[in-house]
Amino acid sequence: MELAIFNKEGKDTGNKAKLSSGVFGIEPSEHAMYLDVKQFLAANRQGTHKSKERAEIAGSTRKIKKQKGTGTARAGSIKNPLFRGGGRVFGPKPRDYDFKLNKKLKLLARKSALSAKLNDKEISIVENFDFEAPKTKLYEAFLSNFEMVNKKSLLVLDGENKNLYLSSRNLKGAKTVNCLELNTYDIINADKVFISEKALGKIEETLS
Image 1 (cartoon, rainbow, N blue to C red):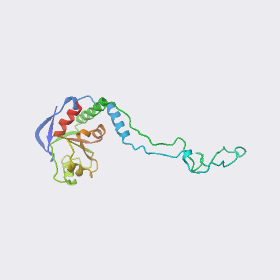
Image 2: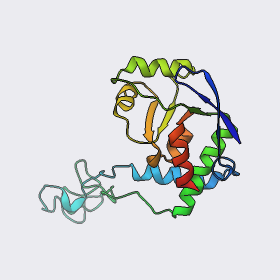
Image 3: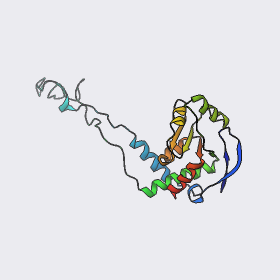
Image 4: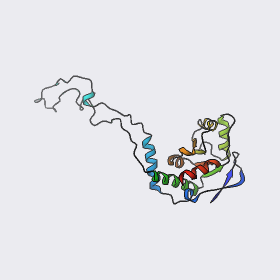
């Protein structure tokens, strides 16, 4: 399985990159991808929601009317949940939404996402490149060469690259990521996945 290697101008260099069939050529597991994306989104939830219950409301606990004879429901205090300003019944409390997934399932999910993207012809291999200084115009020109301006794109690098990261972060839908931090959600969410030559080897080594 081979893919053409492009330069940052969007032109075919004439070289080919060999892709591992064990990473890019498997039968995609939709359920594994669903679970991994669900876990990723759940782990990113803040979970800081909080409402005050009856015991936490500031106010008097004086019985506001007699128990019987009023023709209405009994009420013990103004903190009763039925009254305006009263405590909330079974309100939200701070919690962690994260849940555990097995490592093998997460590996399967990432390989499935990459294989699905390759099947849809949404993966491109690019030569290793860098900018002398962080400039949004340069990264926008790179995306323009592949007709990906204002579309969701993911550039996978072999390591941290400050210039490329800073150049891309102000562009809507553009994202750069270290190959070691690659996740299923980012792969699926992108309309196009660019993988640098050096990153390709590390991805295959990590997921094999």
